[in-house]
Length: 307
Image 1 (tube, rainbow, N blue to C red):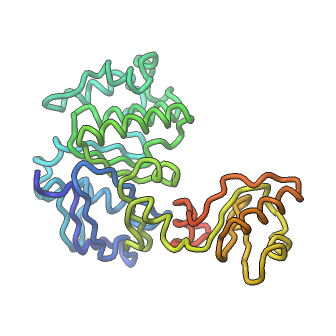
Image 2 (image 1 turned 180 degrees about the vertical axis):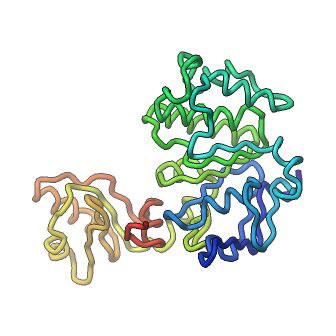
Image 3 (image 1 turned 90 degrees about the vertical axis):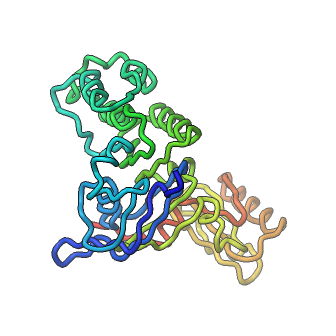
């Protein structure tokens, strides 16, 4: 139990002339929930698949629960759960049949019927996988990852395609897993999800780590002298800047999301809210010295669309 959940040193993986992972170092303590973030093609999936033992690294050291995921895969696999983004179930198999098949491979599985009920799939237990909704397929894949009571769970986009109720249910379940000491490594494109769930966040791009820390550390860094608020999109930021003392900058960082840069005091806050009232809009979600994780992500990785 003294070994970290995941420990990666100098990991390199290439596909022909493309370097997917470029000297990556990562350490994940046990009992933590780590969110691995990055744009498409950043190296997230390759890194996770190497940790799961599905791919071999070209160089570097990878230890999962103290074991080499390739050479010691037989010892590691009973200790981990894997939820791939693509579902992973046979199209024609019924939900409960699939879960019981996976449970039969575990030494001490959870009760399949109980787990189906917990994940809101009790009424769909006899439904073939291909007839489940996208969110139901995701929940069944999550059940398959958890049925064997793993010490460490790898989740790839665990709430993709889920409605808000199902997403909150999964969030609660992941919180319960962490409270029970289970380590969770998830990839997600939902910054709200990472900010709400993660103990630690690692952002990678170009196969390298470009930022890491707790969500609060990442969102607080470099925010002195900033006021943020939300309102109707496409307000005239030049007019707002003119209403403020000289030297203040105002910009719309995303549609409907505004940033005022300069020394923030009560008078500045009053000026901003009064100006918005003059425009007939309400300034909402005012924050002083606080970014959200999505803005941090975009500042670090750029705003251009990745192919």
